[in-house]
Length: 93
Image (cartoon, rainbow, N blue to C red; front, top):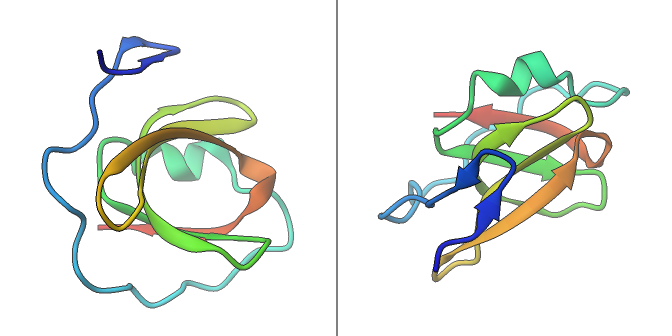
C-alpha cells in the first residue's frame, strides 16, 4: 500500500529522475521559504542539504516548516520528510 501523507494517499513518480545533477543555485543562509519550494510540488527537484547530502526529490506536500515527498535512492523512490531548515538550496526541473 502506498504511504499515507498529510493529504491522504500519495504515490511517487513512476519513472526515475533525470540522469544528470543540475548546477547548484546560490545558497541562502536561512531556511528555505515554503513559498519558494511550493512551485516544485509534483516536479523532479534536486536538493542540497546542510549535512552535504544531495539527491533527487519529488515533493508532494509543503508545510510551514517541512516538506514531504519521495527521495530517489538510486534504485527506487522512498517516501520521506525533511525540515526546511535542513535544506541549503534546491532546483526543480
